[in-house]
Image 1 (cartoon, helix red, strand yellow):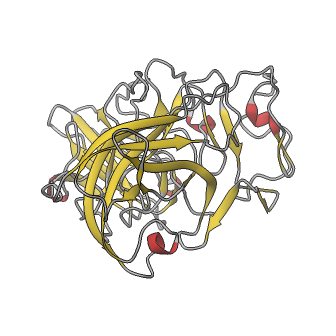
Image 2 (cartoon, helix red, strand yellow):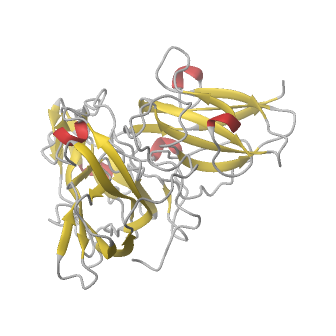
Length: 391
């Protein structure tokens, strides 16, 4: 594992990109996966463009300039290249049951019945000098061959981005194998000490995929298939191995740092159920009242006596979303349960995108924003904005 770690604990939202307003620090704290797959709706919007919207028309090394009808032109070897590294975080062991017709069974992630899972976050910072750029999954109404459409989950995946194995402590024996994960690669937040300011309109998303230099993508442990099935693994100490870009389909400045190991202890029985709402759900759960499957974006300051509006809903005038996300706001710093939430929503302004308004909490005049799929484990994308106004 790299010695460089994000500036704060990586317990925030996988797919939340930039949150502005309400006393927001100009340097966003690291947040979780971005690395989510979202609905394919609108993914054919990028058509014939020589210089895509948002690209720097002056910089010949801006990777977005390489988008052409039918795909991407290979990067100029004289331009700065990206360098991706994997980081494993927030290991969770749980047991849950899967129906024969569940998407996770149909897509080969696990088997029907009661299964034991080793869940974890995978963070992939781009520590190189150049951006990683994938572009849209669909260009000019023609799917890019590097992506595949998941008919069950109904969204595009980038093929074979990450490979998970559970190894013996010596590292010479494979004990269990995870589903070969596919990803939507995007900017979650800046990596410690490396990031540069990037405006919200320039941030890479699932529609136009990539990871800026100095930013990271994160695939959260609560997402469907983000685990290794350890049902038949005896208790003991093991090493989780994660490899990214194993086939070198993405051009990087180096490839010898694309593997990471993390030691784990598999107990004889599952740990006690916690009251942490950021734990993955042990059963199917939907809506805002659940207390599992949430991810924390960050805590923000607000002005006493003001009304705060937070959301990822363009129809409400506060950010944008894809998929079907839900939103929870907590008083102070850190996650909260449904019973202690300041505000919650999963549909607003006639759409499936959330938005909430609330009075600035008296508790230290701070609040924490949490997001999750309306169905726990489902992929979504939530580009939050926040604003406050006198009542």
